[in-house]
Image 1 (cartoon, rainbow, N blue to C red):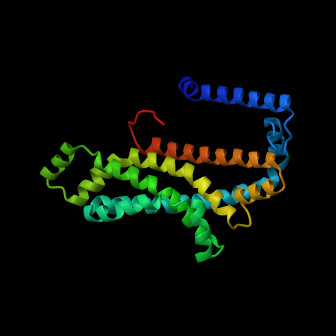
Image 2: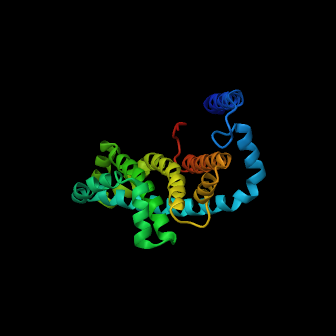
Image 3: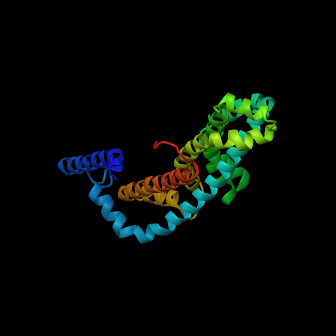
Length: 252
């Protein structure tokens, strides 16, 4: 408990001080709520509108989890292929890097034109922002396997597949989970961006409606739930990591 406080308590205190300063500045400058709401206004809107927001939150959660699952599965599969086939790595890895230089906000409208307003373009957007951290982290983990352990397994007659699945894959688990945690935080924003461009329900739709009606307090409420959902996904993945990766020191 003491260790948890040392790691997160100071951040909570800093956030509270920041919110107090924010509240005071809005009060002193008499800033209108449509321009910048005070934290108390945002909290009031969250309390009063939680049931109206509930359906949007559930919709975004479902979309995020589905897109994150697809993106991470594809990313891990690509990482294994590129690591096991060096020639494919030389050809495809630069293309993967180039794919991350295409702005999502530019690509998303094209996906809607090509695939319509159904679920597919939204999943593609989320998968695109999720798979790359998995690819990079997984390949780094595979490469960091101790050479002496690989040499020992080769000496006892282990095949290439056995070396990979019994040594390199378990050794890469901490790196894979690091990529998963990064992808989890990206996935929520990817879901919101995809909802901006064509959806009937979701946090992105809620934010668009709030902005068009100058309800900035609702926009900040939506931002709060986006951060909350990201932290929740991060925490779940970290919990699974603790269960699967034995003997690892506490980290991020």
